[in-house]
Image (cartoon, rainbow, N blue to C red; front, side, top):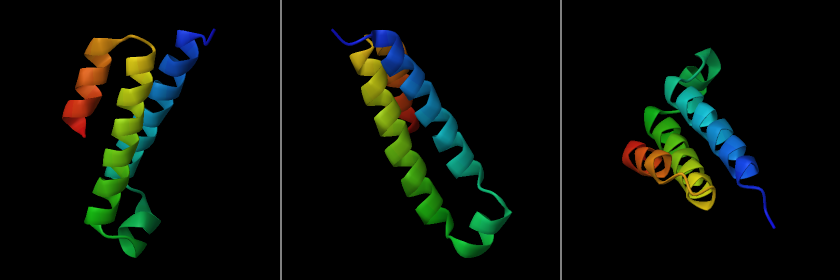
Length: 68
């Protein structure tokens, strides 16, 4: 059986990555467009939502879907 806390930890990691993608660093601002950062963040929020869904944390899953 799969441990749901593993999914929750993965989801939190995806969420942090998405927040960082939205914020962007110095080089990403120079090299990439805002649209690319937003698309990357959207994909990461959707991955986080799916992980929260598998962890049976429906409120967090809904929050991630709304952010995406």
